[in-house]
Image (tube, rainbow, N blue to C red; front, side):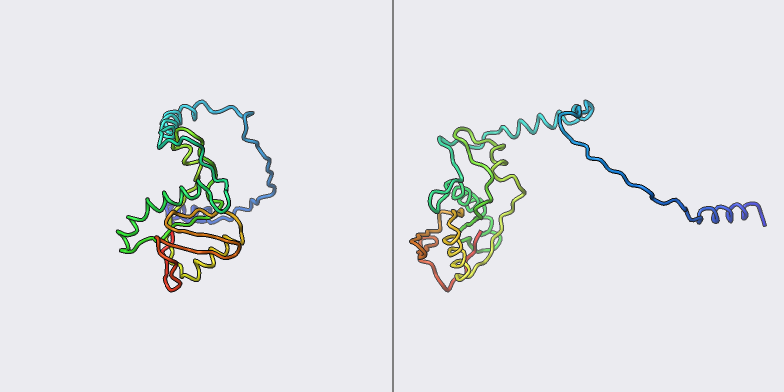
Length: 195
């Protein structure tokens, strides 16, 4: 056998050897990440320009409100909830019409979706992110009139203000209700596009 062949044979033999080492012990400990750990100056320097840019961006003023707008319900109404429903409706209606050649009939959101209030004064991007801190998506669904009625009945039973856009008129008296959508009486035979 040539020395080269012997070397290859030896390497194959050694590389196919089973390793007998086995895991024998696992240990763990909790390390609190708090002020007792000094920040890494290298990391602080690395993120500093991004942090400064982000802070500047978040301080951008989007609007102004002379009074606080809260998510607190007054009866079946929530000023902040309804404002957000109107804004989302306005932002998406034209795009939806362009893409589908159909119209959104109204916007409706869940009661717990808004996470903060808007204080009186300048409204910044930071406050907008606090209001809706998640990667939210606007989705339009087709609901039969029967399903819309079921939602309204849920609102009545739940006794919480669910954000509604201004193009839906809902009057509730005890367990009875009247519903108008886009200024028209509710059509029990129609399928509605709901944001």
